[in-house]
Every structure is written in C-alpha cells, then in structure tokens.
Image 1: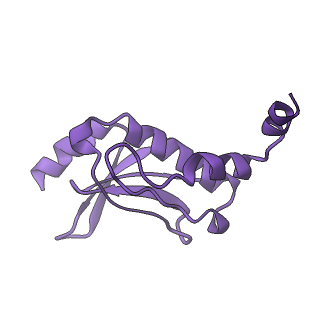
Image 2 (image 1 turned 180 degrees about the vertical axis):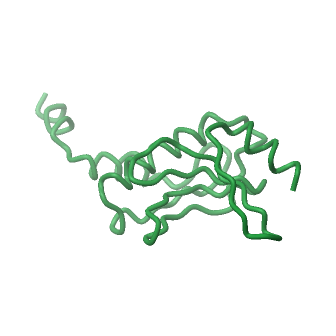
Length: 121
C-alpha cells in the first residue's frame, strides 16, 4: 500500500519522466525529449503531441525527429511525411506544414487538413 501512496505523490515532472523515458514505441520510432530543458507547460505540450501522434494511422507515424524550440516554446514531432505535430505552452495541438520553397508555414487544427495542404505544395 505504501508504494501506491508514493505513486500518487510524484510531481508532474517525475510522472512525465516515468511515462516518456521509454524511447521506442511499437513501430520502432524514437521519441526523445530532454526534460531538463523543459518547464511544466512544455512537458504538458509534450504529452499532448505524443497523444496526438499515437492516434495517427500506422502509415502516418514515421518520425523524422522530435524536439523543443527554446525560442518559440514549441514542442514538436516532425514526421517523415513533412507534417509536424506541435504545441507550445500547453496549448492545443497544431499540425504544421512548411513550404520549403518560400519558407511559409501553415498551421492546422486537424491532421487531415495538414495532409491536404501538403499535397498542394
């Protein structure tokens, strides 16, 4: 019973470390975030984008890289297909498509909208 009590008294950061120190998912993708560089709202954003990523179909899950931009506060998972899943300061997840020819960035609320935009670039 004492173990269960200790489990409930862990800080938000400790819970995040336990949940996300596992760096491989079932598909062999690497998910890594340096929690030492992140504050509580950044870690919350990390939870949001990992949850959004886990809801994607198997074909859309290949990860190119993950990261945290200290300047913008964005926590992101960049997918191999060119879409990034991102959130900053604990806000709702956005799906980012970048036109690398012009540098223009497009943010969408839904993954399908981002996928459609990607087809037009």
